[in-house]
Image (tube, rainbow, N blue to C red):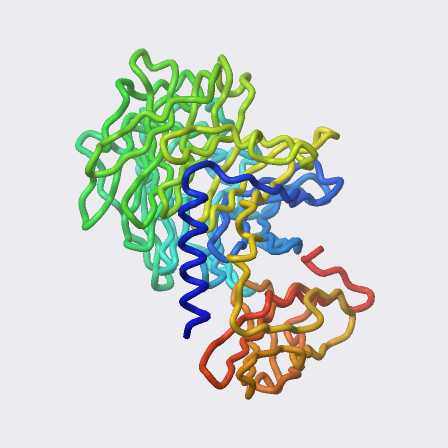
Length: 501
């Protein structure tokens, strides 16, 4: 066990050294090349990225990325043209907001696509989709999914509210007719739980739920609450233990005449720290905030020279990401992504190499490894999703291993119905290796494994074209283990086109 203790000590030293200053990042353009638009909304601790990308014809489809492989999980979806993935948990469950093929009888354009179609939420796992219920209304929207399989979001009820805006909102949604309520779906299939609202409020949105069941979002009335995107309301709120708490504000309240001006909590980590945006006195600008029970709401300010900001994500270390926008603010101002760490807000563009493939515009999520997602602009003017990874993830201390698990191939595009993976090059000083091949649950297709306990295993692509992912775990006689990188297998039989590219 000495080698494991050494690894832990080295990792602790590395963490201490890195915590003193913002890390440097390398940027991966998630593309795809030539695509005019893609957006990354979330990255989990396994490095899976969830978001959306345009497809042929101009529609947007929910998309997952992992180690350079892109998977379209928006087709066939629920029959409508547009969808987007809001998050993916460690078990490969992804939450998706999608249009159906049915017209919205109220023409609310709840998703903001302007198609007049109904907009609902579904859960995706291993190619299987399950539509989530509403509260009796037509539409619903996603927030996030936690590792317990609970989904935060919002769903319409059947209450026709005359106070709702009668025209199209600044973000493209509306005219709104029905009230919508904050909800938690799951973890059981078909379960939906409506969350309570502060006194006097009639609508609300739950944007995030952590692994402890704490959820955050916003609430107000249908007249003064802006639906996503650039959402805002009079109250930023926390739900826990069956109660709702108003998180306070930075002096202001909602102003529906200006995009994003108001109060909303967008994310909460497992330590109970929440981030969002809050209006300042005068109700014309808003700043990112960090909230905790011990300290209340803290104004994080903006990047130098900017007018407004919003905190969009926070990891377990308390690192915050979001965007900061120059005057006059959205939609005319120029956005920049920020990383707030150890009390200092830094433009993420200053932490990446000069030859990075994108100029970064907005950061949307940060995981516990420090990886950040969002979107930026290419030199050709395309808007692309990105994954920014801190340089310390490739340091020798972080990559140290007791047992070397080696498997070939690591990535493969094949038209054959099965492939053989070879892990016989794995090594350990203790010898007597035991092998275990496992299907990675985040794969777009579940594979069938033959002889998974031998050095060589056969992967059968029993679920048709698409992305299959497998990992080898090697254990030696002393009980030390090592995992290979995830093996990416993209099966495209001759004459077919899979959902992964």
